Image (cartoon, rainbow over all chains, first blue to last red; front, side, top):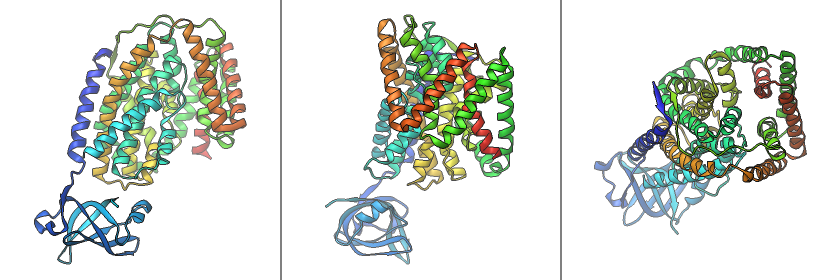
Length: 118
Length: 387
């Protein structure tokens, strides 16, 4: 079976569109919520939460903190990069993105990304 | 989601720019990108992947139209140049592009096969590589009419490869420039070599057997260390019959682009980086199945976009590479490559490049195929596996 080289761009268009759709489907879409809105119904959801960092401490390379913004939620960042670690400090205003989880009957966000806001 | 798509688009744009600059290869741009003051996260991984895949497709344009080889596309420079001189440079580029695109499509179906091979046989099958490489080298030399001259070229090239890879920075780029770039460019600048007016319509046909072969070969290239796309192309063409110039170009493109895709799979399967992209990604992401699919989707999207962009760029560029302007362009490219060798590899690099150019000149004047100079990669591969 042979294929004309003038048809290659159409194959490319099809593959590119397929890749675009898969990327659209697979990349996480974060829902913006406040700490007080983190309920068990949203367990496993990708969320974006803004707040002030409090009670920050590190243990075994993991960072634990509270995020306060008209309510408080616990946050944990497993083995963050140096850049992320430098952004997380007490009283810093940050936006965290991650997955809602529950630990010892308390809601928490398992952080994947941090962005400094102040 | 929007963020990742935006970074993918930026990666495609960056890959186009890098692909059009002669001598810049995907390993270099992957490492240079790591130096950018950007947050190293999923979006950046998507950017790097899109850029690498796009670069590996777009760099067919300077390789064929300007005779400026990259490390990955060097195998295609000779048949590509031959077609350029017959006014069919655009067809040569589209053959390389088709190879890359279809190897990605074929490779997607072969992913489970290579995942299985990687996780079960990674430590066992490399025994085959030195045998295959040695046999390929022997067949290359024996197929020449002037076997003694071919042997001399191969031994010289091989020795230069072994010494340079230890003593010279960016040795592969330096030697490829010397063996395959400078000789052709000097002939163009000093002689009366001018490509005829190029056919500006994309025409020609090709079969579907080769993309499958390219996908298989690139899978093995990504699986084993010490084997790059150029060595793999040269080796496979010594064992498979019926590979003409056009087929060679399809294979070159397919193995080059397929290698980038399979290196992402190898990062997931055996946690080893086999390309600059994979090594760069290893620095900041933890590879799970979701990440693998995201990066493969980014690669597919980038490949599709790169094909369309490359055709448009190639049509525009092919109309310019005729007549007296070609000599001026070649002189500029020659000066740029020599400057790049000097900047990246210093005096040692310039000496190695000069030695490679001399060997290539001896090769062409002796009536021996310049592909014998590929021994500069085959010898070090043998030493790597046997040493």
